Image (tube, rainbow, N blue to C red):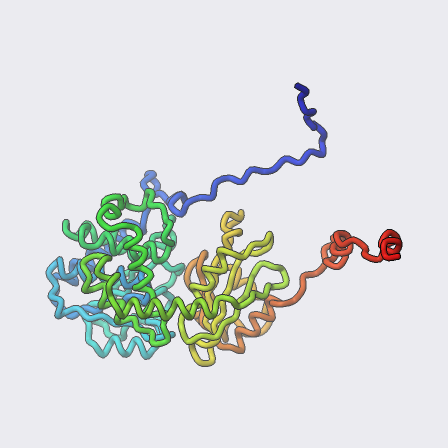
Length: 440
C-alpha cells in the first residue's frame, strides 16, 4: 500500500486549535497578602453585614427590605427575611418596599416613599448603586446595601458589601446566602434553594457550580435543577408584564417552602404565558449593525420588559468575526424613553481581551463633542461588564445610534473584493458560445 505524500511546504496552513471556553467559576479569585481567597466580597465587609443583621434582629425595630424585581433580587430578599425572623425579629416588624416600574431607589419619589414608612433599618438588595445622599433622609435610620453590580460609589452613610470586584462575581442571592448562612444553623436548609434560584436567574441555567462557589450537591438532590430553573422562569415573569406585578412574585417566594410550590402558582403561570407570547411576537425584528460591525441593534416597541430576554436570545444566534454586543432597544416600555439591554454575543465570549459592554458603550458616548453624556444621565451603561443597558430619552438614544453609525455600510477593505465582484466570480456567464449553439 502506497502512503500518501505529506505536504511539508512552508505554505501549509495549520489550523489553530481553540482552547476550551472557561466556565464562569474558573475565573481566578483575588487573594490577600497571605494567599487567602477573597470571595464573595472582602471579609471585613461580610462581617460588617453580619453585624448589621444581628443588630437589626436584636433591636426589634421596624425594618424594611428593598429587593430588586428579578429572581436574584427577590430570592436574596427572602433570604434576608428568613434570616431576620430566624434570629428573632417578629414578621410584623418587617416591611418590603418594591420599587415602581422604571424607577430606582435613588429617585426622590422612592426615597420619600421609603421614609414615610418609618423604618429604623433598611436593607437594599441587588438594586445597583451610584453616589448620592443617604437611602432616606433620616439620621437615625441605618442602611445596608448588598449588591454585585459594578460600582465604586454608594449612597452616603450606608454599610456596603459588594461582590463586583471579587471574581467569579457572586450574584446578590449568592452573596446574601454566604453572609447569612453562618448566622444560624437552620438557614442552609431553608435558604439554599433560594440561593440556587437567584444564581441561575442571573448566570443561566447551565451554570456549573465549582469552587469558590459553594457545593450545592445536596440541594440539587432535594430539588431538581429543572424545578429550580422552572421556578426562576415563573418568578421573573410578572415583573416583565406591562402591569409590572412584582408583588405577586414576592408573595409567591415568601410563602413557598420549596420550588415545587411555586410551579403551581396560577398567577405566575399566566404571567409567563403572556410574556412568552410577547417575546415570540417581538423577537423576529431584524438587526442592524454599527458601521464597524461590533454592535447589532434590534428595535422593538412593547409595554412589556422583554428586551433583556430578546437580547439574550439573539446573542446566542448572531455570529460574525467583528460582532461583540447585541443590543435590544424598547421604545414602548416607558413614555418618551428608550429602555435597552445589551448582551455579549456568544461568538465573542472568548475574545482576548474580553468584551466589556459598559466600557464599549461609554467609549461610543465619548465620541460626542457636546453634552450627550450628561443628558443621558445616571441610567446609561449600568449593570455588569457582561450584561449592561440603560434608560435614556428617545432623542439622546438616536444621537447614540448616530455615533455608532448603525445601518451604515462598512468602508471597503483595500485589496478585498466587493460583494458584486464576488458574485461575478461564482456566477457563471449564461450568455456564452455553447449556449448559443445549443439554442440553434
